[in-house]
Image 1 (cartoon, rainbow, N blue to C red):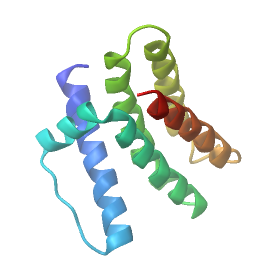
Image 2: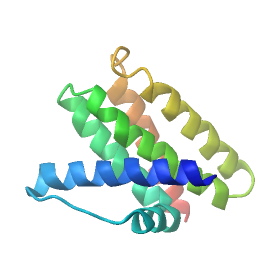
Image 3: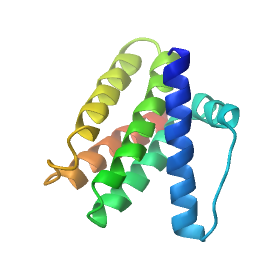
Image 4: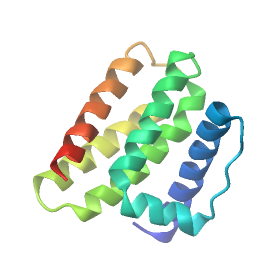
Length: 132
């Protein structure tokens, strides 16, 4: 991952976490960019799962455009996981990351199966977490 991708990923992830915390706890959250990068690098599957859950919650509220940042943050977290894994799991993570990025670019207009897609992605991430 290059520096621009890391910075974008950290910024997107920070925005998603702040949105999630303010929506659920009534507070705002601020984490520095290095803290965001460390969290995504150290626990990429946890970060990906949290962001997908946030995206799913927004889809349930029919806020499809608002689901884009957490979907992109999920993809960024998966990029870290992809780098950490050798073989098939790393390759699978790359395919999943690309699928999420592609869907994020069109979810605002193509959302009829958004919950099914996000559910399938969550299932895959949970399966990887069980194997960690």
